[in-house]
Length: 301
Image: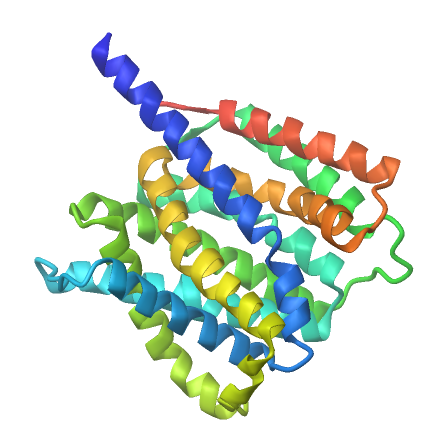
């Protein structure tokens, strides 16, 4: 009884952490949209993770020592996929294709996570319900993303980059689940992942015309939005997401990505005053239904 109660509490904690993370990540587009008036995408990306890294360092200054080189490779892989590759691929994809395309394609990440999780972690046995839930959620996301859009078409270069972004996020989720078994605190492991992500970002920073121009932060709006991305969306939310993966598993946490477009339309209505349409409400309902089906569509080994 006590074991079951403990397991239920861990599951509830994991679900709440994943939900909180998606609620924050779903609103980051607003902060990014504001910052793009004065910053380039690579400047926003590099600065937000630099802020996140130093905040995590302040939260836990204890050095991190891994037991072997193989463990270090997992951290390198997580930094490369979840920080450097994912965000660069997503940002570059947006320059070649529509945001609606990217939103829909990125939502396939839970599917890739399920496949990789089953292959490498052997932790999630997928049932028909998972795939039905996946298709249901994607249908809802398509309704949310393209309703009212006057321009929606296939753009091979950008769409392929978006699919690659979804795939590398799935790789990141699997790596984080493995890292969670090392017995290292989530703050320390996330900070170590950020270190490698920032390290691999240095080359793109020089190639893509990065400029500090710190005087831009004299504008409180720019400062506030950058701090939101660095402190909230990066440092805090990567910790909560990684902890959710540790508690729930890579696949059960990944299905929460379906909710991101729903959070986005709600944030647009509340903050930007955009209208919520009937089609958007139907789409949101399908997303929630798909999430429940996906979560129940997995079993024990």
